[in-house]
Amino acid sequence: MTLKGALLGLALAYGTLWGGAQVLAPAFGRVPIPCTGEPLRMQSPLFCATLRNFVTPELRALARDAAATVAAQYPGTVTLALDGNLPVFDGVPLIPHLSHDDGEKLDFAFYYMDDTGTYLPGRTASPIGYFAFERVGTDVCGDTAGPMRWEMRWFEPLTRDLALEPARTAALVRALLDDPRSGKLFLEPPLAQALGLDHPRLRFAGCGAARHDDHIHLEL
Amino acid sequence: MLMVLLMGAAIWGIGLAMKAPVRDRLIMLGVLLAGVLAIQLILPDGHPLREATGSEPEFWVLVAGLGALVWGYRALLRRLRSRAQPQAPAAPAAPGGPFTDDELSRYARHIVLRELGGPGQRKLKDATVLVIGAGGLGAPVLHYLAAAGLGTIGVIDDDVVAASNLQRQVIHGVSTLGMPKVFSAAERIADLNPHVTIRPYHRRLTSDIATDLFAEYDLVLDGSDNFDTRYLVNRACVATKTPLVAAALTQWEGQISLYDPGSGGPCYECVFATRPAPGLVPSCAEAGVISPLPGVLGAMMALEAIKALTGAGETLRGRMLFYDALYADTRIMTLKKRPGCPACGGGA
Image 1 (cartoon, each protein chain N blue to C red):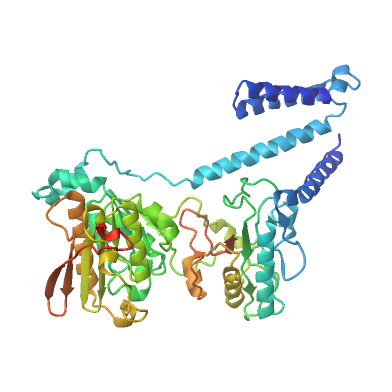
Image 2: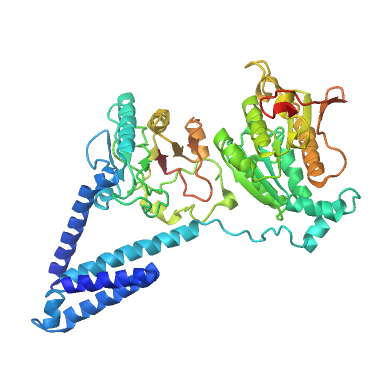
């Protein structure tokens, strides 16, 4: 077997797996977040290619409605989703997340702007949507930080120097929390405070969990 | 190929019948797959054994690759879950174990007290208390209970430290501004007394968790700043038969009592049958509060807790103490159960 043949075989196998997952997902109560289009899409086609964009129909509807609310408030806004869940099997988390295991969790990227304060549609500070931490104020955990609270300092050179766009980001959080279908939303307390956000279902994930000042975590 | 699939099914079925662990069954399937791959790669084209196990190795390579992928995913997940487990404390508390030299030295002034002594200190070490709120009252309560050697202290609060808190909430500091109060308090307690196990709950106390949470504790101290929470705390304490030390204050005055209907005393709702109309009782933010007042009342709360847990002296069960700081005046009022109290029944 030649290398070309092996690669072709692997591509074919993965394509079959990927296509099969798309077909099987509805049977497991999962639907994909769209990979293209507006006002809601995945941050990168890579999420779709790696089957990380599946959620329950209720969560997709919630995400779509929230994205539409922000777009109505700020025309031209594109809301970018990050990790959802695998297309099949409850109880199998989407690594490295340990909670994304039932279709009821979805992460969103922040919105960003350039030096002039102009919103940049579809752009994120991190090429993968995660790990561009805002680090507002004092670290809430200090010495109590657990091993899953990754700081990812080595990743910083790979991020773009973009500033968080506060108005749209706060609007998205409000739209998500104002929806009675939403359960809770995780954001770091200092960032939430800086954005003027306060809601009983707006929570801190705790010092044993991942930082939430690089993305928004929503669950039903 | 069919023969291999049948052999795989047989291995799995026999393993299942023999109650062999899944891991062992998977290993056996792996051995079978390795054997088939070896046959496919070593034997020449047209060999009967190779024909019987599928004439091309690609399919089995893909099966092996898929299996490796699943195994790798599971291994990674196991590793992540293992990392996410709470780490064991460096110096684990040992309820029931002997006092260390450091503890004996630390609690020496307690141990010489006739009413407390070593047995009383042991009771404190074995006790679990829950503090509602890490604010004005919670700060001195947490400070003194930790210093006194309470074995396990839970604290629940959903707020973060703000500059306006530092005038009276002495457990927090400039370095913890913006930090959830429970974590700020936990840091301070860990620094003050590493023998204490602290359980911070960064969330609002709600009716859906209160009863389960209170059931884990021997005593609850309520330092909350609103009536909804006070009534909720009382109901959960009554339901779990947990004694409650509660205090409240505003401007220059405060009050404190121990509510323990399980031991014959009244509950909070026996005394405060109806909550004041909204806006009638101003909060500290609206009316102000003199800085040391929460310290006085909070220290009294810690003291009542210590007495209730050790049996020393006489607690404020069935009595309420009023403290008027502006005129340095104290009064005590006797409290009684209220017949028909919707929370505790009032002994009816």
